[in-house]
Image 1 (spheres, rainbow, N blue to C red):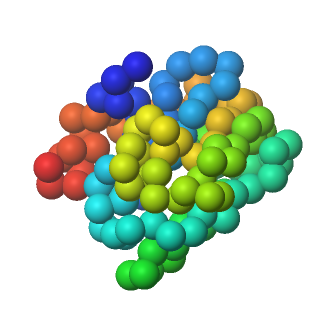
Image 2: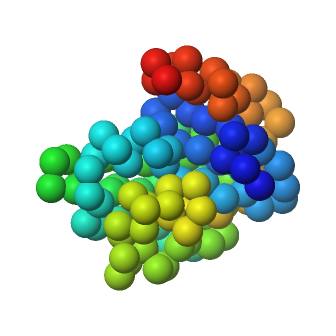
Length: 126
C-alpha cells in the first residue's frame, strides 16, 4: 500500500486506512523535524488506547516527541526491531519504520478527523 493512501493526524502520525488491524507510525515530515532517532519507548502489546493517548516516545539528540493514537483500540503488535534500530523510523517511516499495529474499536467515527495525503501536505505546507 502506498503511503499516499494512508490517513494522517495533525500531530504527524500516519495510519493505514482499512483493515481489522492497522499499522501506524510517524510521518516523513515528523522524522525530518526530529533528526536522527536514537530511542523508541514501545508500548505493551494488549494495551487499550483512546484516540489521542500518548502511545510511544521517540527521542533524538534534538528532542523527545510523543506519538499519539490516531483512534481508539488495542495495540496488537509492536515493531520490536525499533528497540535495537530506532533509526529505521528515519530511513523508512512508511515501511520498516512502522511503530505499532492497532485493532481499532471506533475506526468509522474516529477516522473522520484524519487527513488524506493531499490535505496533510497542505497542513505541513508541502
